[in-house]
Length: 208
Image (cartoon, rainbow, N blue to C red; front, top):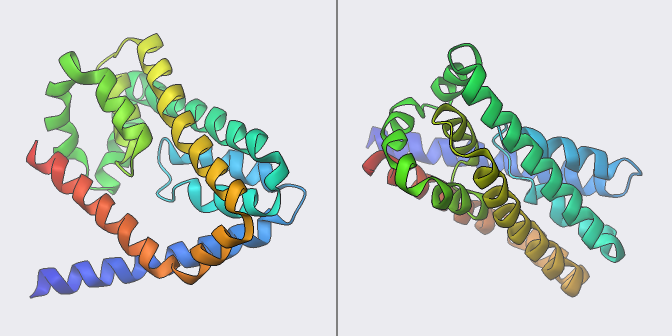
């Protein structure tokens, strides 16, 4: 019973955070500096920030749909650069920086289990994390710790992050206000879906 209450409370906090971030993103989307905010969020999300760039990408593309390719490219490039930063943290600053980040998110045990899979499946792990709600920051740091071939890491990140953000940007640009109305009307359910996927991903790395 206590466990269920904790999950419900965590979801409530998450949903409220998602709503506030989305409302802020809608406000930011109308400003000249919207791309700078998106760039910053995309970068930090790949190494330590919990909110996905999509929350900012969607409203910005809705407002500036004629520039969706540039916006998606910005999101992709900065996310990949953030991934490279996470890789560097894992390779050079694990004890000083990476370990506290993993401890903060309670990912240490999962991370230790995850390390054994990198020799054979490293590229696919990076690719899958780039496309899904799987905690990408864990993968970028782990890739650095395990010294995953850097060009392989870079290509997998570019392809997966690019595929995700360009697809989202294209769909939002294509459906315009319909997409915005749908997202705002169903943000609660979308938050639930993302939370469930994120929670399922966490359970998965616990099992592996």
